Length: 69
Image 1 (cartoon, rainbow, N blue to C red):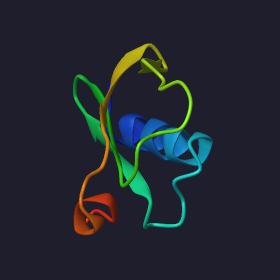
Image 2: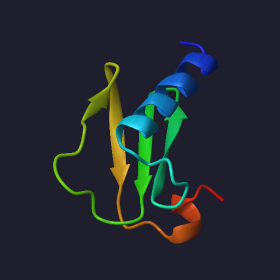
Image 3: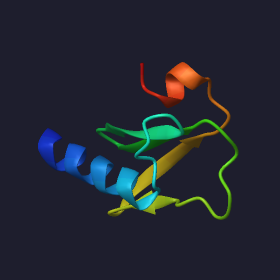
């Protein structure tokens, strides 16, 4: 899969999870899937996969990490 495709899917997942305020968290695209970093405990059920690829979750990360700085 192309890097652009993975970036587009990461952006789509970011929109889906409503992590668009650049403070609460972000999605990182990796070759083997996606990594979600969120500042707080995620409410509700976490997605196990997106577009057929696994999603790895990291909750309660620091503010800088959640903002991808």
